Each structure stands twice: as structure tokens, then as C-alpha cells.
Image 1 (spheres, rainbow, N blue to C red):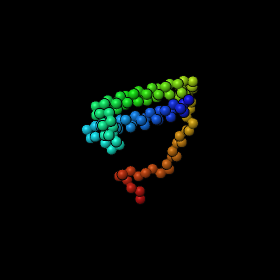
Image 2: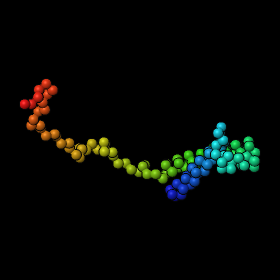
Image 3: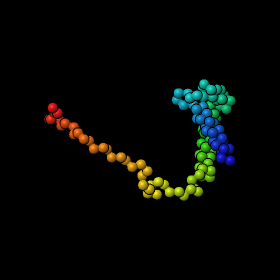
Image 4: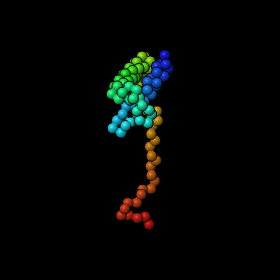
Length: 114
């Protein structure tokens, strides 16, 4: 069931991208290059814009609903009640090593070794 919802989600997302790109903007959009201009002659210019905006709204709603259904019902997270590492309060696994003491001190700026 989860796989089917993911496949439907992918199909809806691709269709949503296509409908958004086919809408004409100030620059003409992709409607002219992918045959969207000829679609205006079939439906009429105003009806084409209404159809694309309505299709965008419907596809966006379906996309959001499918995402919510997938996240609420099919993804794990509600059943697990394990504590985090911080809540356990365990000791750190790796103890940092101390630096070995230096046998020679570095000469200061005013003193030079002879």
C-alpha cells in the first residue's frame, strides 16, 4: 500500500509540474514551446487559463493530501518509545587523551637559546 501511494504521489507531482509550467506568464512560459498555444485555440484563451489554474489547484490539493496520509498512517514513529542518547545519560565512549608533558619549554620571544 505504501509503495502504491508513493507511485501515485510521483505521478501527481510530475503532472503538477507540467501544469504549472504550461501556464503562460509574462515571458510566455513553456506553453508556446510544448504546444500550449495550440491548446488555446481548442478551448479559447480564457478557458485554457481557467482549466490550467483549476488543474493546478486540484493537483496541489491531491499532492498535499497524499503526503499527509503517507506521513500519518504509513511512516514509522508512533510505535517506538526508545529514549535518546541524551536521555539515557550514559558516559562518553571515548575518553580524550591528555597531551604528554613537554620536556622542553619553548623559548619566549625575548630569550633565545644559546
